Length: 375
Length: 123
Image 1 (cartoon, each protein chain N blue to C red):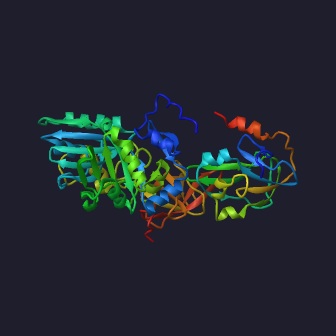
Image 2: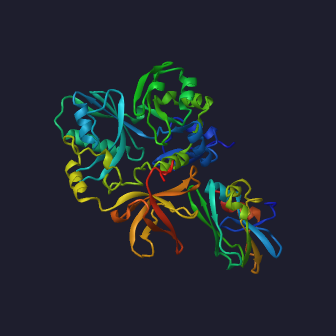
């Protein structure tokens, strides 16, 4: 096997890079990082995660801590969802919005205690997210509370699938994580390694995300793989999340979209106190978004890709665009997400998607998640 | 199919080197670049094509790829097994993963031999 060439200077590598290369991964650029696309077959990796257990390197993602007396108030100003009901070690999904209501990023927020909030953000938006959070905090009057960018302190991996607790038992022994409900955390030191274990994930399977110091990542990864977790790359991660209609930041919504357009109105709590984007979002909710993200089931086997034009059947006018399109290994069929005019968003609506080269396919708007199917 | 004896195009198709009816497929390099192949769309049998015309479309998980006629001819058969097992193209790009058969009418002198094709795929 030839040794891997050194990375082009603009691509970062996670602590698990060598492990991926040794496992035969096809390495590709993603969000400024050199990441494993797959280790042979993305479909096999996808199926393994749904059937048993897969493991994903997500060390490229970012972490930000909000620490101090006013941590909850600052965190609640930054995100649209309401953090007040959170108990210690409980997490939730949210978005961060600018004053005009457009989305900066989607995040998972964990409250460890009232003075310590831990936020996981997307890899390609880390710097943008940190700048946004710091700016929001700087505009508030707070007592000794700071925003701490913490991505360099943590490696992260996701262990996902029906057998995830069995894999954990082998690696870490019987522990409190078996009783952790979804969206809860355990933090502690095991075998001298500081760990945060959070029952969150991006696959739609039961599972957990584990954070550890970068120097301990390889040993932990190898232990999980040895216990039966199958290494899975970004391609499987994408097909797994697409089957669940989880949004991909920067693709299913960008800096131009608001949460009501992106179908994320459920994480906007207009009833809570002040938060960034509140007034713009209440106006958008009142008058209704101008487009909405829907699930699409194309007919035939052709797969519409990002940017494909959507039309009402038989009409030339564009009514929307595909944001994510791909193959669903669980359904053996193409699936897609796309924005459409709100009057064409009802499940059952028939639309046409342009495939290029003068060809198109018909597609039906469907309720999501795509898998398991709702109808 | 012995990949050393096949003829190739710069667009990663291979074609049997001789005969009136010749099988056409994509190279191992091409299937590796595409990743898991999940669907192949064929035209009607009997379609007449010029060299460089699109004959069929391959969908992999990550990309859509057109497959072009290496030489002019008539599409006389396509590999029906790929309807149920499109991944055969990944596993046996030179064997069971052949795509279609061309009744060749055009000139094939512009095609590459394996060594020349391999050079085009080197980085």
